[in-house]
Length: 385
Image (tube, rainbow, N blue to C red; front, side, top):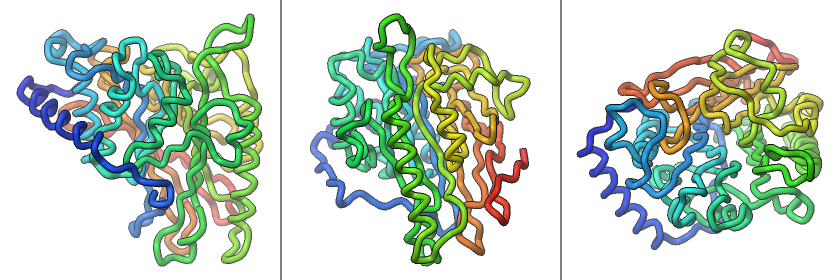
């Protein structure tokens, strides 16, 4: 974990407070002015996943599960500093917040807490998106009200729900982003990487089924329709492509299939607690495998698990706990997951998807670099792990 001095923390606090004041006065961009995402001229698209910030009230909110020397001056601001550091180090093309952005039970004002939690991402002017976890709504705002606030913040590409599914889909925060090919390339107007964001809910509302929520049938129906539509566009004129564009899925609560892995059989990373998934299996893993375009799933929820494991061709990956007001493990650094998709220089389609993690230590150490997926000439999966 980072060694933060009191002077540094106070400096960040004052700068942070000034930024929040400016944020409240800033004009909100309309959807028509939101940028379209595309691969850079270097042939890469980089995503930073931030899981489980558990932000509450800023400098007055104390840290959990840190080493004794850190306790006196550790607060939500350590989460803020970590985010600013990792954004500056990685310079991602997109920042993805995968739920429990705030810890509702301890929050005095959910709007202020949300604004503060996302402030480093907003200040970076990098596009960002968010979905909800099981703790965000435990203050005074509902999940719908939280998403309606999030979508009004600067530089976000978040949606309350995909417009075509808003009348039937369960939850709030189900949407898709298309990542186009590099500028001036033959695929500059095609989506070569598709991102799916889903609301995995909070707690079961079904009688006699206790525990956490799950991705519902209506959401899986939307995912299948969206995936098929994107494949048709990918294969259609102009410049029709073979096969399917790969996809990545982000949500908060892990699938029951995450139980398939431990520290011994996961490809990288560790298991240090259970998988706190729903008590029922909604079949979303089977839906993802059957469609075949999504190559990796990224979740949060279980803070001291950070492994990736591969099952039936689909990578199941934890982000690892990010926030300091979230439970963790003293001496086990808070962390963020980075994912990079790389283009085939000749064809312009995605040839590989890689990942690693950044630790909140003195050097922002990089660990567990691995290749999640590669494409062969005929579009089939070629495992190189």
